[in-house]
Image 1 (cartoon, rainbow, N blue to C red):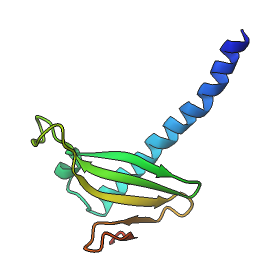
Image 2 (image 1 turned 90 degrees about the vertical axis):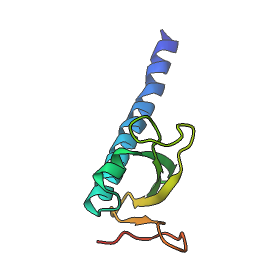
Image 3 (image 1 turned 30 degrees about the vertical axis):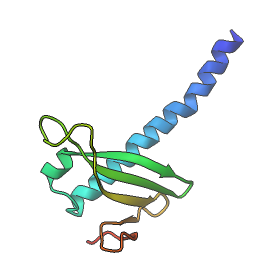
Image 4 (image 1 turned 180 degrees about the horizontal axis):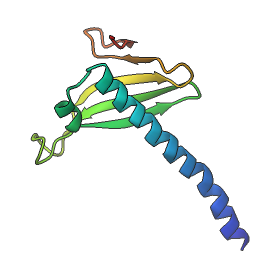
Length: 107
């Protein structure tokens, strides 16, 4: 019984993390669409990956999705850009520029 209770206690933080992860990826997707960083068609052929998480900032990498619908070589997923989201302020930056440096997302 103790093992079962311990297992349940361990699952609680993991489920909370999964929920936070989904919320972060949804927010990143909304920012991409709202700021026209990708068209809806490009977004449909992209994947978002949670890369780095700290207490205040999260990095999300946007990659091309290659499959039957989107085309391309399925084994490849080229990076489009990386975004950083400030979890406290909601500010977002991306590195889609010549210097590949994090800069504010254009309005």
